[in-house]
Image (cartoon, rainbow, N blue to C red; front, side, top):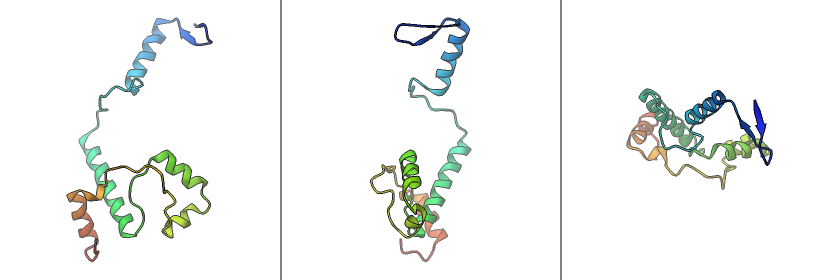
Length: 123
C-alpha cells in the first residue's frame, strides 16, 4: 500500500500506517522536541553516582577520567594499534576528541567521595 512519488520517495497511502509513523516519531523525538524523556529519579542519581565513582578511580590511577564523545572515542580505540596498552601506559590516545565540558569531579559530592575513597591522595 505504498506509492512512489516523484523523486523515488515512498509515501504511505494507508492512514493507519501514517498514524503509526507519527506515533513512532513522537515517541523517539525524531523532530528534536525539547521534552525530556521521563526517567525515574533513582536512575538519574544512580547514573551520577556511577560517573563519580568511575571517574574517581580513573583519576586515582592517573588515567584520563573525562567523558569523551562516544562514537569518536570508540572509533579511535578500535582503530589505534595497541590502544589499550598505550592508554594504560599513560598515552592520551583520545587527544583531539571532544570531551564533556563538565568535569564530574569538580562537584562537591565527588570531591568528598574521592577523598573518602583515597584519603592519602594529594589531589
